[in-house]
Image (cartoon, rainbow, N blue to C red):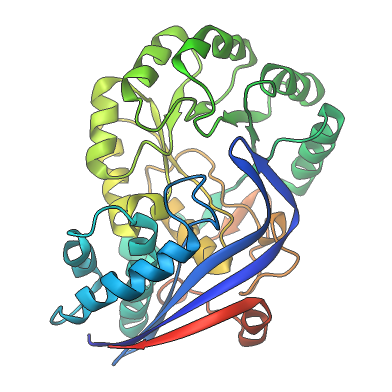
Amino acid sequence: MKLTGIELRVIEMPLVSPFRTSFGVETTREAVLVRAVTDEAEGWGEGVAMSDPLYSSEYVEASVDVITRFLLPALARVDDLDASKVAPALEKFKGHRMSKAAVELAILDAELRAKGVPLSRELGAVRDRVDCGVSVGIMDSIPELLDAVGGYLDEGYVRIKLKIEPGWDVDPVRAVRERFGDDVLLQVDANTAYRRGDARHLARLDPFDLLLIEQPLDEEDLLGHAQLAEVMTTPICLDESIVSARAAADAIALGACSIVNIKPGRVGGYLEARKIHDVCAANDIPVWCGGMLETGIGRAANVALAALPGFTLPGDTSGSNRYYTSDITEPFVIENGTLPVPTGPGIGVVPDADALAAVTTRTEWITL
């Protein structure tokens, strides 16, 4: 397969409501889309870097720059390009995993479309539908939180994730448990908001029978997570700390986690995500698919990944209407708490030209 050119497209999509986490408030989703054009087909990838370097060191403008100046020239020198050659060709460039993942997905999508193979089959999926959870941001009040959770449960979501931070943790969790009962699958996500000295406070969450607490400490503090696991009975799940299959293996060996959240953008792509899945499966560590407010492009790929056998916990693969009034692809709609795995070739969806044009702020075509 010969890569003839790449289109980079920056989009901005308003969220249906502000989404607040411990690192800030988002009201719009800015993202980089990658369209890879080859001599056989074209494919789409979605970058999950945010507008500002808050969740990670990556951000949209840096993603555009590194893809244009470094990643694409390196790929142009690869003979007989396919998706498996993308990561090795880009390995010399430190970091920028979200940018690498967007490029890899676009090329993988083009490759699979040319072959007529769905991404789910290529990755090794075993299900045609996946259970869906939803992420609930930090609210201004507990009554507002309870209304939001009740609405998502009415929509059929099978798992609720509450974003937490110091000052918004034990009381909101208690309120949700008291209102909706112990049968609701409930977990919390701290996005690195706590420190080792908060261990005893975090242990106050143990009585609420949570599925997990996600990334309570700094992403580089594996030892701190291992120590926290000795204090808490709530399972520790790592997110930001898991950037590769090797990082996952190290975290497991240290006892820093008993569950792993796999976000393909965070780890450099869907092929590395599959390796992390395999490492976790070999160590009896359950995994689930995290979300980064993806459009239908990234959501389609995430759903395909979440259909692999080791993904035994509901992920953040919400319906399109969780974040957007209208998506740039056919919307993903929750039915009986699940989403269907796309069956078409590649990621199985394509953006609607009019919808895409409406949210595009700029494009750049790079001939290779």
